[in-house]
Length: 319
Image 1 (tube, rainbow, N blue to C red):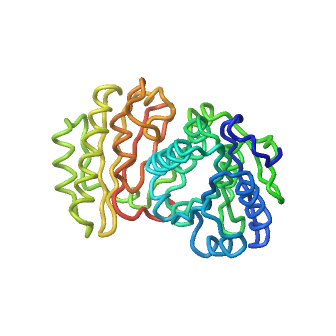
Image 2: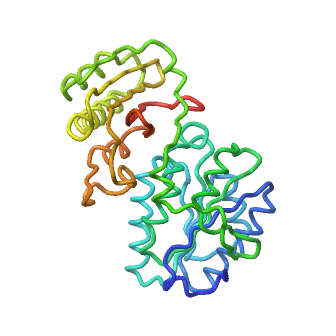
């Protein structure tokens, strides 16, 4: 697909690039961004610092290019969606006919929180489609695990090519199908230990007290307060919309706290729940809040029920 200036009429073109060297990355993203600048489009670069500097050095300076810290922007998937939507709405309001973005999920997030970033990569095909946007998501094959690359192949309708173009990706899966499908979640290692609390059908007030009582972390009080709020919302969701029994379990060490809330139901019908704003007709306020304030939110649906895992602090590697 060409890199011409007709982006505004095409909606969102979401592409991935798998690269194994700095030269391979630059061969794709520099012409892609330069083509946008030549067409009068706004361009955004959100890469980790060393790669951002490579792109900055290779790209001609322009007021239409915006470099944003990847670590800040990609702190949480729902927050990233909100921030990008606000940024793009501002560009469009300012008269932008097209927008181009090069970004990457930081390696630390891939290692500890890939489940919700996989959901992000699927959901943005819908969440950004109203904007005149082309984006390239960069994944380094030297450091990115195979299961992550498999998800990347399923969530990007296009593959970016050297010279700034795109081609169709035959492995792409419709976001609704991807998000509705069962996704096994690797347990946090702490879940293999005895929980500090194990409650059945707790009221939200009891769930809040249990989190406070189980806190053995060195985390700031505000971070535990956020987890308390998220656990209360998710427990209330499970009691109202799920099926009994609702089981709440809590684990903690000095660095993080993990809470799982499981019920016997099927979970929310809306596959975008948590990632898109809670004013959607399907609801999802509790999951939206949790996605905004927790360090990690993992969702798991199987034949026996639906589980939400909430984490405060630094998620364990592989969790």
